[in-house]
Length: 287
Image 1 (cartoon, rainbow, N blue to C red):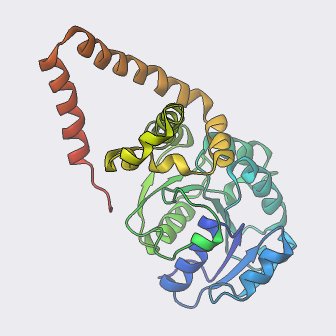
Image 2: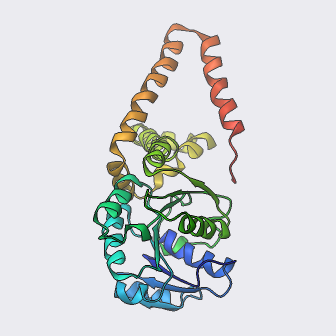
Image 3: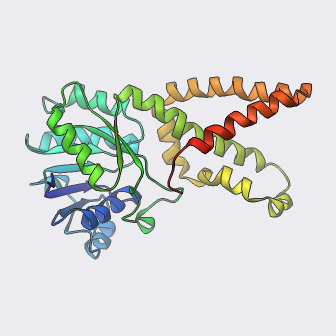
């Protein structure tokens, strides 16, 4: 049975607009409301078949909604959550799509003015190196993981409702604490992006004529470096501690590979490469 009849989406960027599309495609009879800061954006949303109403005032957007999803840039999510919790009644659940959960969940729990149990964090691991409503698609969430991060005060029934919502959109749902979430994504999301950006930054200093001779491996390894630098700087700033720990561990690994090259330990290097190959082959992902 469908859990939510009216969903308010705060911020119709890539994730917010894709979420609105997915709700309309996969949830029968759902009403989708949208909030945006810019009236030009609201006018565009009103022309879309995935938007039932568009609002400039947050209070109007969330009125009567049984689910509110905050899809703004990660640095602003906590403040929007606090505002929305102050506006909504006890029957409204609030979630988000933020890539970092520890600070967001702590803020909701400590400053939620008694309404913190209405908030349950989410992180749909879906996105693109592109950003903005123009690149939105209703299929963005299909077969992707979503990590739901309940608070200690969360009602298990509400956790189930949020989890079912993402599952109904085609996602594979996992439950983790906010702290566990941040450690996981530091390794499997934020770290890969930083490494891809580091490679691209390093290679940018080489002769530009060499670019024309680069193979597909270069493109595969650096594709995500095209992402919005402001957004990714926000994410890395908010997960600074965990990401620094991951980088420290990786530096030991890359130094190990470097030593095999310098010392001509080819069997050791082959073993190192085989471990990476075996790990990647076991990984399940919808290409």
